[in-house]
Image 1 (cartoon, helix red, strand yellow):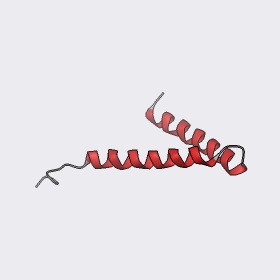
Image 2 (cartoon, rainbow, N blue to C red; image 1 turned 90 degrees about the horizontal axis):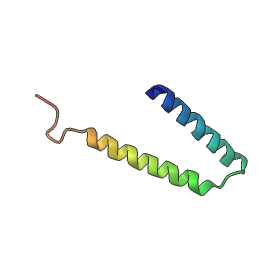
Image 3 (cartoon, rainbow, N blue to C red; image 1 turned 90 degrees about the vertical axis):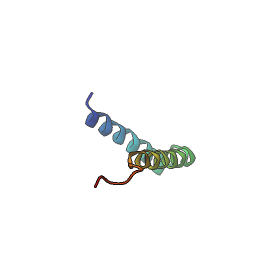
Length: 57
């Protein structure tokens, strides 16, 4: 599987989960916790990409 296929499949699964939450067939708390954790991980990953010495001159 390519990276794009993995991302696409992940988005489809997430949207299905969100639809179940919206329809009331799944509890809201795990979805909110997942979103919080994903945003935190994205922030850490983004911060790790920054060069501490600044941009090259």
